[in-house]
Amino acid sequence: MKRFTKPALVVASFSLLLYFILFSPKKQEDSRLITLWKVDVDEVIYTPPQDKKTFSKFLSQKLYFKRDYPNLKAIPFFTVSGENGGEKYLYEGGYNSKNLFRELSVPKTVFLQDATEELKKKFSLSESSPSLEAYHKGKLHKKIYLGIPDRNGKYRYAWSKNEIYKLYGFTARRFTKPIQEFRDKSILYLGEGSISSLVSKTAKEKVFLQQQIQKNGKHKISIWKRGKTDPVRIAPSLGEKLKNSLKKMAINRFPDEDTEGFAIIKELVKAETVLQLEVNLDTSVTYQIKVFPQVELDGNVFSPTIANIKGRFTESPYYTYTKNINSLAKVLGEIKAAKQWTPPIKKANQTKVPKK
Image (cartoon, rainbow, N blue to C red; front, top):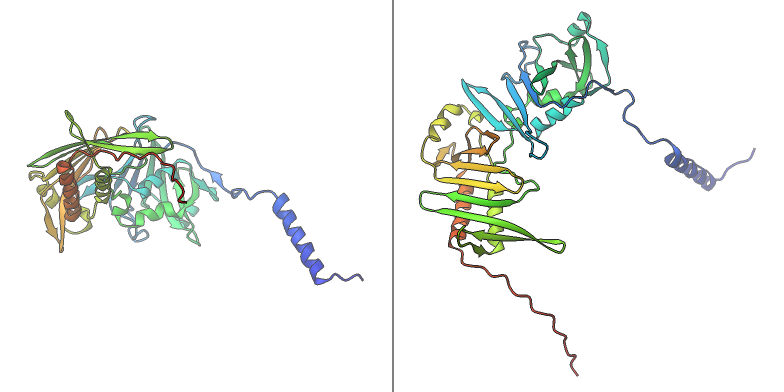
């Protein structure tokens, strides 16, 4: 019997592996996956469970999610709203809210069965279970009752009308985490846009600033000017400091994160503002931000704040760190006092005469 040497076996094995890599069919999406439906979901309502024993980890507050997308050219916004202690609130939705729409627009499953009473009981599916309602253009597309997770926790059983199926577990798990995780903590989001103009107002002064973007070959140049009637060009470094200060502004505390609730902050925002901002982006989005006198909570100094996305929605009040507001005010003061800036003139390259 012919025997193969070790090197020959290695070469043969490598050749066989290479053949499979080059000529075997590419790995496709799990062939067991079934697309349950395809619909452009623009509103979702979460209803908490009545069966609090089986679903003790689920949020006990009803939530409303909406996608604000008036036309194809408009930047889409997502909102999440609800009620806490008799006070209604609305905030911009964060990534957990956004992903919810994607997951419920084209859900896929590896399990689909007729909804028998036996299966419903086995998987804790009833009208007492937590539920999600998916809407399209004001019409209810699907009401989904959530049951228990499967053995490995990757999926969770769900029921709609005459069908029982599995949804990916992360969709339901979002509703077992703190409610604040559905909200976006950024106050002003530039994204791929740029500031086209900014107006700031305090009791003492007003600043108007505009930015023009000019192309210089492959590069973009930001030209910042202060004032309307007789604009003064300011140093680009001041414009960058302003952008960085605006980006640092964030929601550092929601009223319902602790026991003080919304009632207190609603009283705080009845005071006179200490700062008002209107920021216009080149994406046709306008932020109107009002900042109110500072307050100390649990050893931290906050400024109650309200933001309005013009023509879209107004967020409920929240707290932002006063130190970031002060940092922004300092930059605005520097811009107000800045003198005319003239870009340096580039000297023409001179041919150097070599030394003898």
